[in-house]
Image (tube, rainbow, N blue to C red; front, top):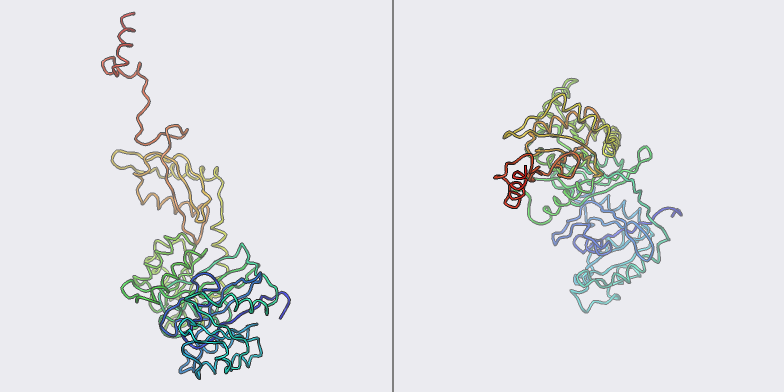
Length: 479
């Protein structure tokens, strides 16, 4: 092991022995989806862990078993890769089930790696008579009884794991860019994830619902760290099954919130669906940067040099609310335009960080108002006096004025379009916040506030309040 390399601990075992539960207990959060259904974990999930002053990567793998098809074979190959990369292998079995043939196969595979192997006999609460010596038959010398339900045995177990590991620390780049792949099921998210990461990290299959957890990988491009997040497909609300799939969709929504930029994927053979529009709307509402990615371009039959030029306006028409987002056609099979995604991501991140001087913004506002003054409603004329940019993550501009609630939505859209033409902000939503000025503010008055009247100049004596009328009569009589 290299001196600067962070060690890896892989959790392996047959399906439904509690690997993901152990993974979550060590991390202290619900990172992997857990359920009683066997085979919940399909991708290997990697997360940073810390114990006894040491950092390491903890890997939760799918259940080991005989591969019955290509899909299962890819899962088992992924487990094999995880064990080969691991510095310590944690084999998990169930206390109340005892040792079976699948457990023996898992243990044999782990021991053949010649890496340090530790046995965790999980669900010990379901067999109060279980003893560590009962499981020596697997050939693993170090055995620990654990219970996720009772939170027992884990401190001793990971004290031993930490003792084997070298001292290491994971330093995450504070400037790391977070990018999520979002879309309907089976639109090619995992294939694109693998193409970008240049390794088979996510399971790819021609069936919907393959990815359940958020799968992550970190790549470097032009000195920048980019963390990719592959997510489960978002279905229509009525088709989301209760249980694992519901958690998967919630994870996808969580990934949007964690992102700086979302790659919004559509299938080139099934464009502009109603669900696509709904997902795109969720991304825009979150205020995140976005790239519209038309995936599986290689699978489009009968395309020619003009097909893209014909499709682009149609996509723009159906996604008018995302006209600021760049559109790109990609193929994970041929690698078409995959590398260009990096350039777009960096460009959008730069746009989101852009700060415009207040003086330049107010010059722009005056030009906009001179070219096209806002129309009012209900005899109220909106007035826009002053603009400044706030420090929000999404580019946000605060505009002070009067009667701004009467500003028509089409005028706001005109302002946004002109602002983009003038200052850029490609690939990111922008927000306008309108504020009515206070009476004490130099730019205006509080809406609905009573005006300050000059009693002597504006009202006749009989119109004055009673406490003022006497003063006025006395003054008139003295003349």
